[in-house]
Length: 479
Image 1 (cartoon, rainbow, N blue to C red):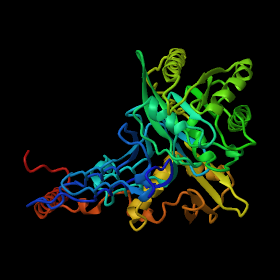
Image 2 (cartoon, helix red, strand yellow):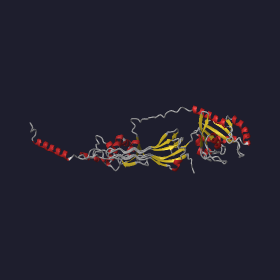
Image 3 (cartoon, rainbow, N blue to C red):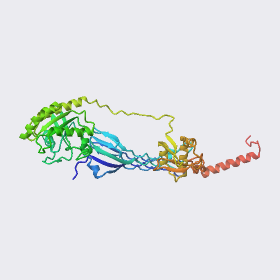
């Protein structure tokens, strides 16, 4: 049964925003007390957060579909809808977030580091928020926006100070088991280790982590064997340790050629040329292994490698190796640039930036693209004439109509707002309000023009009095 997963494809969906409410306040003797529709709630975000207690992506391998909750719709009485709850997804330290094309979206290193993978949709405004001096009682509200959705890829790159690399059965698992408290599976056949193993080593005042990377073979950088499945776990390590088998039973292999093969694979993978290397000649407890180690050691030292002869079984040479690795790790940590707090960069848009573009496509269709017009279209209820008229007014104020005329659009031409796969298409009529011009001022509820019976009777009496006064000309009966 799979217990370690370091790469998954995740299908995520943020919550949709709640719709705004179109409501009119009513009470006794005041049936039309003004708009009181509340705003819709915001949809929940999908957030990836580093959690040190999580070491694998296994949970997302079994359930790759994750969705945040939607915002609640607004209600009458100026009651706003409840915001959707954010979905927090814990991931291991060292998780890289990529899109389907392989582009890196975020590199999550350090406990608590988070990334908003999908943003929830904003809630729609209720008619109370849309009211103004000119639009006293809107008979419509804005719809909530849909949340982001899509597919992302999570890749785990082990965060360790030292990486043990080498051929299968070179003794890497045995070595990490005696250097630390890790208990990896150990057997006398290749590819015993199928997942990276981590251990913690103490060398004086230095405490560091060591990773046992599954065995590499020729062609690993191109995917042969375990290949790229685990080469990425070497990327974050500060020190590389070549574990060479001095007691191999394969006649065509020897420690020097093994080292050359692994170095070539690391070179082909790229990005590891600056890491300090240490060579460990393992299995010197075997008589032939000790003799072979003494033979190849001068050649390796002539290449500039620091060489240690050890035996994981007999516990020979381990203390010297432990402190040598501790010194290299301490130097690597001291050489790292000091971490600074994340800086928030604000890039305001130009004041004359309308935020949209108008282009004519080959088939003659004019396409409008921009954050504002596309958002306004998503928030419009096209079954409501007032809402459509309100959209037309907003687009006109933004300058969309002027840009269409400048681009050569004529009455009856097709205009699309949004991307090709999700656009609103209509026949453009200059200076027309999409049928809402018959409503008078946009968003005005004509019910407010109707007076209460008492007010109407008073006005009728005042009109009769004015009419009788006009019959007497300039005569004032009170003089």
